[in-house]
Length: 178
Image 1 (tube, rainbow, N blue to C red):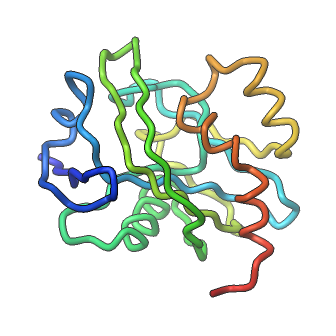
Image 2: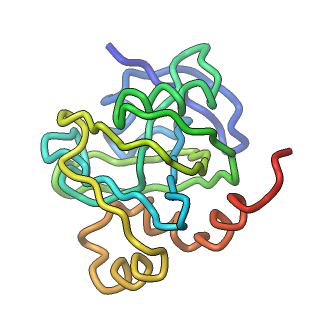
């Protein structure tokens, strides 16, 4: 049983829940992270979620998402999921956090996340886990924003929210390390 961390609207721990249980009946607010990866030229890596995923299967989204485990630091969890999903490592920088709710009509599940967003530059060739990912592609940011506007049904709802802040993500890549 995979447990996730329940939080309040200030990201303070308030308990734990089994992963699927936290996504039922309107969802419970829980800690999560999303990773947006760029190549050295500034293109964005997209992953197509495996069709068999428990929710939002078959949709395009950011490079990697996940939940920290009980007692696991957020950045450690982000690096763990990069290795598990994409078989890569990358320096990461936390840029911002947001709270979102997204209902998946296909599964009947609801995401309700306090989502910490990280960026990184990927110089390795990804080796995607087929249980997690059905495909990868690189795309210019401006093309991606246009495509999401034209075809939102092809993308996860949280990714569309992240893209509203694409300039902030791109700027974080150019900033000096803290």
